[in-house]
Length: 391
Image (cartoon, rainbow, N blue to C red):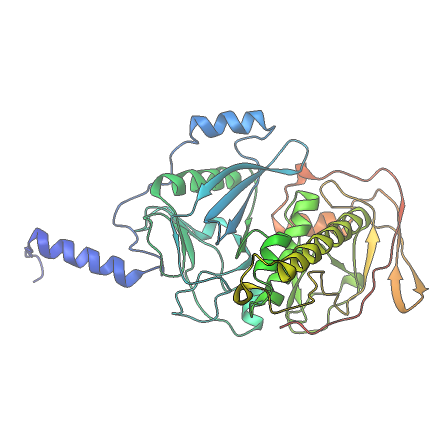
Protein backbone atom coordinates (compact mmCIF):
# COMPACT_ATOMS: atom_id res chain seq x y z
CA UNK A 1 0.00 0.00 0.00
CA UNK A 2 2.65 2.51 1.10
CA UNK A 3 5.32 3.21 -1.50
CA UNK A 4 3.57 0.93 -3.95
CA UNK A 5 1.69 1.73 -7.12
CA UNK A 6 -2.08 1.40 -7.14
CA UNK A 7 -3.42 0.76 -10.63
CA UNK A 8 -7.03 1.39 -11.56
CA UNK A 9 -8.61 1.28 -14.95
CA UNK A 10 -9.43 4.48 -16.81
CA UNK A 11 -13.11 3.52 -16.74
CA UNK A 12 -13.14 3.13 -12.95
CA UNK A 13 -11.24 6.40 -12.51
CA UNK A 14 -13.77 8.19 -14.70
CA UNK A 15 -16.62 6.77 -12.63
CA UNK A 16 -14.96 7.92 -9.41
CA UNK A 17 -14.51 11.46 -10.73
CA UNK A 18 -18.04 11.57 -12.13
CA UNK A 19 -19.55 10.34 -8.88
CA UNK A 20 -17.54 12.96 -7.00
CA UNK A 21 -18.98 15.67 -9.20
CA UNK A 22 -22.51 14.46 -8.60
CA UNK A 23 -22.08 14.18 -4.85
CA UNK A 24 -20.42 17.57 -4.65
CA UNK A 25 -23.42 19.17 -6.33
CA UNK A 26 -23.17 22.89 -5.56
CA UNK A 27 -21.25 22.24 -2.37
CA UNK A 28 -18.05 23.75 -3.74
CA UNK A 29 -17.22 21.31 -6.52
CA UNK A 30 -14.14 19.08 -6.71
CA UNK A 31 -11.35 21.56 -6.06
CA UNK A 32 -7.78 21.22 -7.15
CA UNK A 33 -8.40 18.65 -9.91
CA UNK A 34 -8.07 20.88 -12.96
CA UNK A 35 -5.68 23.58 -11.72
CA UNK A 36 -6.12 27.33 -11.85
CA UNK A 37 -8.35 28.71 -14.60
CA UNK A 38 -8.90 32.18 -13.20
CA UNK A 39 -5.99 34.10 -14.71
CA UNK A 40 -7.23 34.84 -18.22
CA UNK A 41 -7.28 38.47 -19.43
CA UNK A 42 -10.48 40.40 -20.09
CA UNK A 43 -11.67 39.54 -23.62
CA UNK A 44 -11.21 42.21 -26.28
CA UNK A 45 -14.94 42.54 -26.99
CA UNK A 46 -15.50 43.52 -23.34
CA UNK A 47 -12.52 45.88 -23.25
CA UNK A 48 -14.04 47.78 -26.18
CA UNK A 49 -17.38 48.06 -24.36
CA UNK A 50 -15.64 49.12 -21.15
CA UNK A 51 -13.86 51.96 -22.94
CA UNK A 52 -16.98 53.03 -24.83
CA UNK A 53 -19.02 53.25 -21.62
CA UNK A 54 -16.49 55.33 -19.68
CA UNK A 55 -15.39 52.48 -17.42
CA UNK A 56 -11.98 51.05 -16.62
CA UNK A 57 -11.02 47.36 -16.58
CA UNK A 58 -10.61 47.53 -12.79
CA UNK A 59 -13.62 49.65 -11.87
CA UNK A 60 -16.11 48.13 -9.37
CA UNK A 61 -18.66 45.54 -10.52
CA UNK A 62 -22.17 44.47 -9.47
CA UNK A 63 -24.26 41.46 -10.54
CA UNK A 64 -28.04 41.27 -11.00
CA UNK A 65 -29.72 37.88 -11.47
CA UNK A 66 -33.24 37.30 -12.82
CA UNK A 67 -34.47 33.72 -12.56
CA UNK A 68 -37.55 33.80 -14.79
CA UNK A 69 -35.67 35.55 -17.60
CA UNK A 70 -32.54 33.34 -17.15
CA UNK A 71 -30.37 36.46 -17.18
CA UNK A 72 -27.31 37.57 -15.23
CA UNK A 73 -26.42 41.23 -15.70
CA UNK A 74 -22.92 42.55 -15.03
CA UNK A 75 -22.75 46.26 -14.19
CA UNK A 76 -19.59 48.34 -13.75
CA UNK A 77 -18.86 51.78 -12.29
CA UNK A 78 -18.28 54.51 -14.85
CA UNK A 79 -16.11 57.60 -14.58
CA UNK A 80 -19.15 59.46 -13.17
CA UNK A 81 -19.32 57.16 -10.16
CA UNK A 82 -22.64 55.73 -11.37
CA UNK A 83 -22.95 52.16 -12.59
CA UNK A 84 -23.94 51.13 -16.13
CA UNK A 85 -24.84 47.78 -17.63
CA UNK A 86 -21.79 46.27 -19.29
CA UNK A 87 -23.09 42.90 -20.46
CA UNK A 88 -25.96 40.41 -20.13
CA UNK A 89 -25.28 36.69 -19.80
CA UNK A 90 -27.74 33.86 -20.26
CA UNK A 91 -27.98 31.64 -17.20
CA UNK A 92 -27.54 28.06 -18.33
CA UNK A 93 -29.38 26.48 -15.37
CA UNK A 94 -30.69 27.42 -11.97
CA UNK A 95 -32.26 25.15 -9.39
CA UNK A 96 -35.70 24.97 -7.85
CA UNK A 97 -38.52 27.40 -8.55
CA UNK A 98 -39.33 31.06 -8.05
CA UNK A 99 -38.92 31.99 -4.42
CA UNK A 100 -36.20 32.14 -1.75
CA UNK A 101 -34.08 29.30 -0.41
CA UNK A 102 -35.19 27.99 2.99
CA UNK A 103 -33.04 25.06 4.07
CA UNK A 104 -30.01 22.96 3.29
CA UNK A 105 -30.78 20.37 0.63
CA UNK A 106 -33.92 21.95 -0.82
CA UNK A 107 -32.03 22.48 -4.11
CA UNK A 108 -33.38 26.01 -4.30
CA UNK A 109 -31.37 28.93 -5.73
CA UNK A 110 -31.38 31.90 -3.31
CA UNK A 111 -33.05 35.26 -3.78
CA UNK A 112 -31.94 38.39 -1.99
CA UNK A 113 -28.96 40.71 -1.57
CA UNK A 114 -25.51 39.16 -1.15
CA UNK A 115 -21.86 40.21 -1.25
CA UNK A 116 -18.77 38.45 -2.60
CA UNK A 117 -15.22 39.03 -1.34
CA UNK A 118 -11.96 37.66 -2.78
CA UNK A 119 -12.04 34.82 -0.25
CA UNK A 120 -15.25 33.55 -1.86
CA UNK A 121 -13.67 33.20 -5.30
CA UNK A 122 -12.60 29.68 -6.34
CA UNK A 123 -10.28 29.42 -9.36
CA UNK A 124 -9.90 25.66 -8.85
CA UNK A 125 -13.57 24.68 -8.85
CA UNK A 126 -14.66 21.39 -10.36
CA UNK A 127 -17.33 23.50 -12.05
CA UNK A 128 -14.67 25.32 -14.07
CA UNK A 129 -14.71 28.56 -12.02
CA UNK A 130 -17.00 29.60 -9.19
CA UNK A 131 -17.67 32.08 -6.43
CA UNK A 132 -19.80 31.68 -3.32
CA UNK A 133 -22.54 34.34 -3.25
CA UNK A 134 -22.67 34.40 0.56
CA UNK A 135 -25.90 32.59 1.42
CA UNK A 136 -27.18 32.63 4.14
CA UNK A 137 -26.85 36.36 4.74
CA UNK A 138 -28.03 38.27 7.83
CA UNK A 139 -31.63 38.36 6.57
CA UNK A 140 -31.66 34.62 5.84
CA UNK A 141 -30.19 33.74 9.24
CA UNK A 142 -32.73 35.94 11.03
CA UNK A 143 -35.44 33.71 9.54
CA UNK A 144 -33.64 30.50 10.45
CA UNK A 145 -32.74 29.62 6.87
CA UNK A 146 -29.90 27.19 6.31
CA UNK A 147 -27.61 26.16 3.48
CA UNK A 148 -24.02 26.59 2.35
CA UNK A 149 -21.76 26.83 -0.70
CA UNK A 150 -24.34 28.43 -2.98
CA UNK A 151 -22.42 29.45 -6.07
CA UNK A 152 -22.35 31.08 -9.43
CA UNK A 153 -20.28 28.59 -11.42
CA UNK A 154 -19.63 27.02 -14.81
CA UNK A 155 -20.27 23.51 -16.16
CA UNK A 156 -23.96 24.24 -16.88
CA UNK A 157 -25.13 22.01 -14.00
CA UNK A 158 -27.01 23.15 -10.91
CA UNK A 159 -28.36 21.78 -7.63
CA UNK A 160 -29.12 25.01 -5.78
CA UNK A 161 -26.74 27.30 -7.66
CA UNK A 162 -26.71 29.60 -10.66
CA UNK A 163 -24.82 27.80 -13.42
CA UNK A 164 -23.30 29.41 -16.49
CA UNK A 165 -21.43 28.10 -19.50
CA UNK A 166 -17.68 27.89 -18.94
CA UNK A 167 -17.12 30.73 -21.39
CA UNK A 168 -19.52 33.04 -19.58
CA UNK A 169 -18.29 32.25 -16.08
CA UNK A 170 -14.72 32.95 -17.24
CA UNK A 171 -15.72 36.47 -18.29
CA UNK A 172 -17.66 37.16 -15.10
CA UNK A 173 -14.90 35.75 -12.91
CA UNK A 174 -12.22 37.76 -14.74
CA UNK A 175 -14.11 41.05 -14.41
CA UNK A 176 -14.67 40.41 -10.69
CA UNK A 177 -11.00 39.52 -10.21
CA UNK A 178 -9.92 42.75 -11.88
CA UNK A 179 -12.32 44.81 -9.75
CA UNK A 180 -10.68 43.38 -6.63
CA UNK A 181 -7.27 44.26 -8.06
CA UNK A 182 -8.59 47.81 -8.52
CA UNK A 183 -9.50 48.15 -4.83
CA UNK A 184 -13.09 46.91 -4.58
CA UNK A 185 -13.23 44.83 -1.41
CA UNK A 186 -16.47 43.05 -2.22
CA UNK A 187 -19.18 43.24 -4.84
CA UNK A 188 -22.94 43.00 -4.55
CA UNK A 189 -25.10 40.24 -6.02
CA UNK A 190 -28.80 41.01 -6.34
CA UNK A 191 -30.83 37.84 -7.00
CA UNK A 192 -34.47 38.32 -8.08
CA UNK A 193 -37.24 35.93 -9.13
CA UNK A 194 -37.92 38.08 -12.22
CA UNK A 195 -37.50 41.66 -13.39
CA UNK A 196 -39.38 43.73 -10.84
CA UNK A 197 -41.81 45.40 -13.24
CA UNK A 198 -45.47 46.19 -12.52
CA UNK A 199 -46.46 43.71 -15.26
CA UNK A 200 -44.50 40.87 -13.67
CA UNK A 201 -45.81 41.71 -10.20
CA UNK A 202 -49.40 41.53 -11.49
CA UNK A 203 -48.55 38.16 -13.00
CA UNK A 204 -47.45 36.91 -9.57
CA UNK A 205 -49.82 38.90 -7.35
CA UNK A 206 -51.40 35.73 -5.91
CA UNK A 207 -48.07 34.05 -5.19
CA UNK A 208 -47.31 33.21 -1.52
CA UNK A 209 -43.98 35.05 -1.81
CA UNK A 210 -45.52 38.26 -3.16
CA UNK A 211 -44.79 40.25 0.03
CA UNK A 212 -41.17 39.07 0.04
CA UNK A 213 -40.79 40.12 -3.59
CA UNK A 214 -42.23 43.57 -2.81
CA UNK A 215 -39.37 43.96 -0.34
CA UNK A 216 -36.82 42.91 -2.98
CA UNK A 217 -38.38 45.48 -5.30
CA UNK A 218 -37.44 48.21 -2.80
CA UNK A 219 -33.78 47.34 -3.23
CA UNK A 220 -34.21 47.04 -6.99
CA UNK A 221 -35.80 50.51 -7.14
CA UNK A 222 -33.07 52.04 -4.97
CA UNK A 223 -30.50 50.71 -7.39
CA UNK A 224 -32.33 51.82 -10.53
CA UNK A 225 -32.98 55.40 -9.40
CA UNK A 226 -29.46 55.87 -8.06
CA UNK A 227 -27.41 53.64 -10.40
CA UNK A 228 -25.19 52.55 -7.50
CA UNK A 229 -25.19 49.55 -5.13
CA UNK A 230 -27.68 50.20 -2.33
CA UNK A 231 -26.40 50.03 1.22
CA UNK A 232 -28.21 46.97 2.62
CA UNK A 233 -29.08 46.40 6.28
CA UNK A 234 -31.54 44.19 8.12
CA UNK A 235 -33.83 45.15 11.00
CA UNK A 236 -37.25 43.88 12.08
CA UNK A 237 -36.29 40.79 10.03
CA UNK A 238 -36.53 42.68 6.76
CA UNK A 239 -34.17 44.38 4.34
CA UNK A 240 -33.76 48.17 4.55
CA UNK A 241 -31.83 50.18 1.98
CA UNK A 242 -29.60 53.26 1.91
CA UNK A 243 -30.08 54.24 5.54
CA UNK A 244 -27.65 55.54 8.14
CA UNK A 245 -28.77 54.97 11.72
CA UNK A 246 -28.88 58.05 13.96
CA UNK A 247 -26.70 58.46 17.06
CA UNK A 248 -24.28 55.72 15.95
CA UNK A 249 -26.89 53.07 16.55
CA UNK A 250 -26.67 49.74 14.76
CA UNK A 251 -29.13 47.85 12.58
CA UNK A 252 -29.90 44.53 14.26
CA UNK A 253 -31.71 41.84 12.32
CA UNK A 254 -34.37 40.99 14.91
CA UNK A 255 -34.57 44.36 16.64
CA UNK A 256 -36.73 47.40 15.94
CA UNK A 257 -35.28 49.56 13.19
CA UNK A 258 -33.47 52.59 14.62
CA UNK A 259 -34.23 56.13 13.50
CA UNK A 260 -32.22 56.70 10.36
CA UNK A 261 -31.42 59.10 7.54
CA UNK A 262 -31.27 58.78 3.78
CA UNK A 263 -30.58 61.11 0.89
CA UNK A 264 -33.33 63.62 0.06
CA UNK A 265 -32.73 63.27 -3.67
CA UNK A 266 -32.77 59.49 -3.45
CA UNK A 267 -35.92 59.52 -1.29
CA UNK A 268 -37.75 61.75 -3.77
CA UNK A 269 -36.68 59.69 -6.79
CA UNK A 270 -37.52 56.42 -5.03
CA UNK A 271 -40.98 57.60 -3.99
CA UNK A 272 -41.70 58.88 -7.50
CA UNK A 273 -40.78 55.53 -9.04
CA UNK A 274 -42.89 53.70 -6.47
CA UNK A 275 -45.93 55.87 -7.23
CA UNK A 276 -45.50 55.47 -10.99
CA UNK A 277 -45.13 51.70 -10.67
CA UNK A 278 -48.18 51.45 -8.40
CA UNK A 279 -50.27 53.39 -10.94
CA UNK A 280 -49.14 51.08 -13.75
CA UNK A 281 -49.68 48.01 -11.56
CA UNK A 282 -53.27 49.08 -10.74
CA UNK A 283 -54.04 49.69 -14.42
CA UNK A 284 -52.69 46.30 -15.51
CA UNK A 285 -54.47 44.48 -12.68
CA UNK A 286 -57.77 46.19 -13.54
CA UNK A 287 -57.35 45.31 -17.20
CA UNK A 288 -56.59 41.67 -16.36
CA UNK A 289 -59.62 41.35 -14.12
CA UNK A 290 -62.00 42.87 -16.70
CA UNK A 291 -60.63 41.29 -19.85
CA UNK A 292 -62.87 38.79 -21.67
CA UNK A 293 -59.75 37.39 -23.33
CA UNK A 294 -58.17 36.19 -20.08
CA UNK A 295 -59.63 32.83 -18.90
CA UNK A 296 -61.24 33.05 -15.47
CA UNK A 297 -58.85 30.49 -14.01
CA UNK A 298 -55.90 32.68 -15.05
CA UNK A 299 -57.27 35.95 -13.72
CA UNK A 300 -55.71 37.28 -10.48
CA UNK A 301 -57.64 36.34 -7.35
CA UNK A 302 -56.35 39.43 -5.55
CA UNK A 303 -58.61 42.37 -6.37
CA UNK A 304 -56.54 45.05 -4.64
CA UNK A 305 -52.81 45.00 -3.91
CA UNK A 306 -50.03 47.43 -3.14
CA UNK A 307 -46.48 47.20 -4.40
CA UNK A 308 -45.38 50.23 -2.40
CA UNK A 309 -42.54 49.89 0.10
CA UNK A 310 -43.63 48.86 3.59
CA UNK A 311 -42.36 51.52 6.04
CA UNK A 312 -40.69 50.30 9.23
CA UNK A 313 -40.70 51.84 12.67
CA UNK A 314 -37.29 53.43 12.07
CA UNK A 315 -37.97 56.93 10.77
CA UNK A 316 -36.24 58.14 7.65
CA UNK A 317 -35.06 61.70 7.24
CA UNK A 318 -33.19 63.19 4.36
CA UNK A 319 -29.63 64.39 4.06
CA UNK A 320 -27.74 66.15 1.30
CA UNK A 321 -27.70 64.39 -2.08
CA UNK A 322 -24.66 62.28 -2.98
CA UNK A 323 -23.18 61.15 -6.26
CA UNK A 324 -23.50 58.25 -5.79
CA UNK A 325 -25.75 58.76 -2.78
CA UNK A 326 -23.07 59.55 -0.18
CA UNK A 327 -23.23 62.83 1.68
CA UNK A 328 -22.04 64.89 4.61
CA UNK A 329 -24.36 65.42 7.57
CA UNK A 330 -23.24 68.29 9.79
CA UNK A 331 -26.33 69.28 11.76
CA UNK A 332 -29.71 67.87 12.71
CA UNK A 333 -32.84 68.95 14.54
CA UNK A 334 -36.06 67.36 15.61
CA UNK A 335 -39.46 68.50 14.38
CA UNK A 336 -43.01 67.22 14.53
CA UNK A 337 -45.20 66.63 11.50
CA UNK A 338 -48.97 66.16 11.48
CA UNK A 339 -49.97 62.54 11.87
CA UNK A 340 -46.60 61.29 13.11
CA UNK A 341 -43.52 62.31 15.05
CA UNK A 342 -40.59 62.21 12.68
CA UNK A 343 -37.04 63.31 13.07
CA UNK A 344 -35.84 65.61 10.35
CA UNK A 345 -32.46 67.04 9.56
CA UNK A 346 -30.94 70.12 7.99
CA UNK A 347 -27.74 69.05 6.33
CA UNK A 348 -24.78 71.05 5.07
CA UNK A 349 -22.13 69.90 2.65
CA UNK A 350 -18.56 69.43 3.74
CA UNK A 351 -16.65 67.58 6.42
CA UNK A 352 -14.69 64.35 6.30
CA UNK A 353 -16.77 62.40 8.83
CA UNK A 354 -19.79 62.04 6.55
CA UNK A 355 -21.55 58.82 7.69
CA UNK A 356 -22.52 57.88 4.13
CA UNK A 357 -18.89 58.12 3.05
CA UNK A 358 -17.63 56.21 6.07
CA UNK A 359 -20.12 53.38 5.73
CA UNK A 360 -19.87 53.15 1.96
CA UNK A 361 -16.10 52.86 2.18
CA UNK A 362 -16.40 50.29 4.97
CA UNK A 363 -18.79 48.23 2.87
CA UNK A 364 -16.25 47.93 0.07
CA UNK A 365 -19.03 48.32 -2.49
CA UNK A 366 -18.01 51.86 -3.44
CA UNK A 367 -14.42 52.95 -3.86
CA UNK A 368 -13.19 56.27 -2.49
CA UNK A 369 -12.67 57.62 -6.00
CA UNK A 370 -16.37 57.10 -6.78
CA UNK A 371 -17.50 59.52 -4.08
CA UNK A 372 -18.42 63.15 -4.70
CA UNK A 373 -19.14 65.91 -2.17
CA UNK A 374 -22.33 67.90 -1.95
CA UNK A 375 -22.18 71.57 -2.89
CA UNK A 376 -25.27 72.98 -1.25
CA UNK A 377 -27.29 72.52 1.96
CA UNK A 378 -30.59 70.69 1.51
CA UNK A 379 -33.53 70.60 3.89
CA UNK A 380 -34.91 67.20 4.73
CA UNK A 381 -38.35 65.73 4.23
CA UNK A 382 -40.01 63.43 6.77
CA UNK A 383 -41.33 60.10 5.53
CA UNK A 384 -44.40 58.49 7.18
CA UNK A 385 -43.63 55.57 9.45
CA UNK A 386 -46.71 53.32 9.93
CA UNK A 387 -45.63 49.69 9.87
CA UNK A 388 -47.40 46.72 8.30
CA UNK A 389 -46.63 43.07 9.03
CA UNK A 390 -43.97 41.54 6.76
CA UNK A 391 -44.32 37.89 5.94
